[in-house]
Image (cartoon, rainbow, N blue to C red):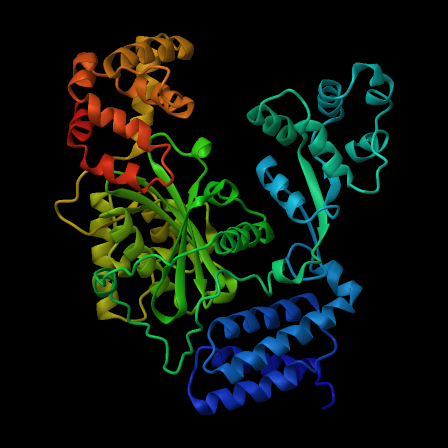
Length: 555
């Protein structure tokens, strides 16, 4: 078949886009024909390549038959092969995560350690945003002082300054620097601070097919084939009440694959979330749900867990392909909630995905009140304003916590019922961002506290009671808690460190020592469960610790 023209390509691509979520036999035949024609296009530009790639990703996630899935997968292989032969196009697709393209970005110390170990002798320094004096000072701290001449020589950038000390071909300059930092006598926290101060931007050419954005997959669960139109009328209550299946049994290889999928998905988006970056292999839970949707939950390593809440991240897979990510910040029965749908999957099952997520967090963690912060629906987020994200949440049952804004939304809802074409003004959508949105699944939802407010009260207590002296606050408060609970050398170091954090909170009330002694066993358990294999027992214990929530009411 001869190559098609750019005009034909654009028309056929638009036609294919309109058919992605159509699933009967006649559509399958048309999809196959369009794929055969589109892949003959020989003049891809940046935008046309990305648009075609995104459609293929959506079609792989939403197949109507094995034959079509095989066809789309083969087309993806051919598309990537075209990219391999087109260096000019590769350079225009920097930062996409496509095979044969480059990544140039700044990441945290923990993330960089992960990717350099995953892809040895591939990732190097591109540049650094830190100034020359900062770079000299850090190298002075890390290198033998007798090398001062090269440390301070000239006004070189970091890459050229490091080149004076690094000549090995078995490791990159970035790997040499990371090794230098790790070999210092500094603790891991300080190592991270030093690395992050350098402001290093890395460069890497994606060369591992399975870890490229096109072929990145989670656990190998059975494929769901769509034979009916997508259900756009989603009823949250119906979904959330369906009994949750037991988690999928995972072996170490499964967990590693899921963690890789999460970390690399965000790597290509130039983003990080703490549960992904600090993923705890022992705290990965996978639920296989309806219609090829599976949800992986991520707890952090013990040293990175939050003190007042549990930050549990998630990655949603659609037929094993990463489709959405975010997290829940759980404190009692309240969960702050955030969601991001990956671009290839917008316009598909966004409503179903968020309902399934709420189902998981409600049934598995016992959350009965979900709170969405304003950024998710428009604050400093023009795209969310443009798409009317506020109404996406509103249709699911979320309502403004502010009473005046609830009344405004109710009036607008009436207008929408009268006129189906009614749309909120941009100014109105911006008004809604002055309040959180909340979904309450139970009128008796308890406890319901914002951990940020609790944190602010702790700060206020330190400032007023200890005259801003944080070290004194920890020493005094922990001494009291230690005596109340009988903390001794048999306690694990991580439990003692966590006890020091909670000690300030438990010192706020005037009769705090008596309260601590009265509820000794529950407080001990609260502290020691924070270092358990997973955070689920801590979440459940805190929800049932009624005296703790009464204490919250009193401070």
